[in-house]
Image (cartoon, rainbow, N blue to C red; front, top):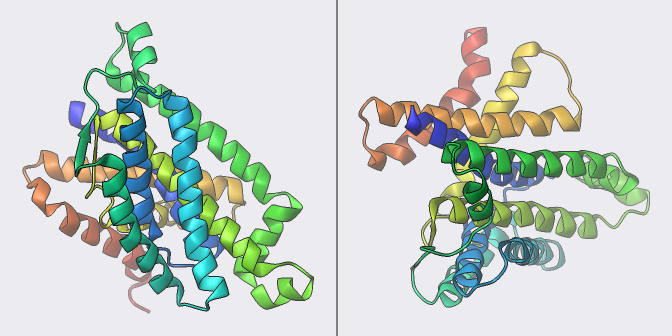
Length: 292
C-alpha cells in the first residue's frame, strides 16, 4: 500500500513534466528532447540552492526561469537557424549535461537536514501521513497551474499559440510571429518540466545527474494514457479537460509501474515496462477495432 501511495504522490510531482510534454507534442507537434536536460536542470538548481540555504519558493522560481531559457534556446535554434527540432533539442540537452554538473559540483547532491518546500507542512501536520501532506501540497500546485494554463490558452495570445501548432501558414498570414510563438511555447513547456524536476528533487531528497535521462518517454506515456481515457468517451473536449487528463494519466502511469514492481519485477526493468505501457496505450485504438 505504501508503494502505491508513494507512486500517487510522485505522479503529481511528475505531472508538470507531462504538462510540459503536452504543450510541445500536442500544441506544437514538436518533438522536444530538451526535457531530458531541463528536468535535471530544475533538480540540480534546486538542490544546489537549497543546500546553500536559499528559500525553496525562490529556488523553484529560479528553476522555472532557467528551464524556460533552456527551452527558448531550443526554440531559437530551431526557428532562427532552421535546424531540425529534434536535433535542436539534442544539442541543448547535451550542453545541459555539463551545465548541470557545474551547478551541482558533483553528480549527486543530497538534501539532508535542510528545509525544503515540504518541510514546514510536514512539521505542521506531523500527525498526518507524510504521503498525505506531500500529496496535498502538490495537488494545490497542480490545480493552480491547470487553472492558469487554461486561462492562458483561452486568451488571444494563447489561441495564437494553439493556432501556430494547428496551421502555421494560416496564422502567419494573420500577422502572428510564429517564431515567437514557438520560442515562447517551448520555453513555457520546459519551465514546467524544470518545476517538475524541482519538486521531485525536494520530495525524494536528492538530485542526480542521470535523473532526466529518457524522461521524455515518461512524459509522453502520461500524455498518451490520459488521452486514451478521453478517446474512450468518443467526445471532443476543451483544453482544460485535456490538461486534467494529462495529470490523471501521469498518476495512472506511476501506479501501473508501482503495481509491476509490487509483483516482483526488478527496478532494472523500468524502461522495458515503460516501453510496453506506451505501446499498449498507442495500439489500444487498433486493438479495439480489430486491426481494421
